[in-house]
Image: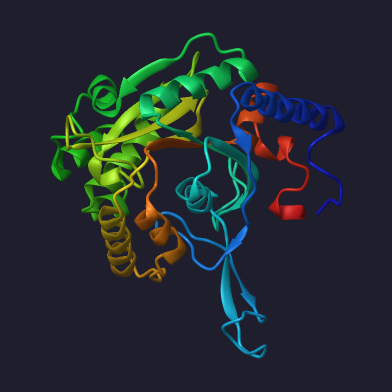
Amino acid sequence: MSWQPTMDWQNAKQRAHILAQIRSFFLALDIIEVETPLLSHATVTDVHLDAFSTLYNYSAESHCDESTNLYAQTSPEFAMKRLLASGYGCCYQICKAFRHEQQGRYHNPEFTMLEWYRVGFDHFQLMDEVAELLSSVLGCQQVERISYQELFIREVAIDPLMTNRDELIRIISAHDKLSDWLEQEDCLDTLLQFIMAELIEPNIGDNKPCFVYNFPASQASLAKISLKDPRVAERFECYFKGIELANGFHELTDVAQQKLRFEQDNQTRTTLGKIEQDIDQHFISALEHGLPACAGVALGIDRLVMLALTVNKIDQVITFPIVNA
């Protein structure tokens, strides 16, 4: 184990320059930088995300010999939406986020995230703005935009909105990717996500960023369901050079629908043997007060810097990854 940083001084200077570029980009648009806590009393119910937690012994609701759980944020999303509901305008944040997952080529459990919200935007307008930021930082002059449905039809010749388990298993098997756990998998979304990650993502965004939009409604997360086609959610992701770079939503503002999604997440967590998570009541209260129509996006800063510096591992753009933090 080395005590030295994994990012050299030249990369550190270039990273600092990129952060300055990002702040200049938002300053020119009058999008205001904000800061929210890294620790909160609740966390996400998302089945695919696990948060780090710690114990706090000085809560106003407990004696000092009793502990309260606090969670390291997986993203600043809930807190920033609380700001919007309180009357804040278009804003952004560059912050640390934490996810209890494996370290890898593109992953570190502690990472830097850029998240921003545009009041009055839909996901298409926000895609345009993400493209402008990528042009500013990476020099990308063009981007590709394609719907999730069109992408699956083009790449693997199936319609993901009209498919079934047997068809998905056949596609995976035809590409020699079938394993025991997949043969036992009944969830269509899990199979679709596997096909996306293993068979489609390696083939898109090679020469220019690829924006994939209108994901299946079952993968809506915190996005609105489309009024034009209720089979899809108004959500997008951006891929470039093998990296999943950004995830954005035309944000859900319906509190009843949001509560239902959280409850469904917890039901799935129980089915998978995971711990149910308490629903963030501060966030629910903010939605009840009223979240303005808006679109928001989260973008991985470390991955963006990797692309700008044309390096192969996230360790090269952060000082101390988890192995020697």
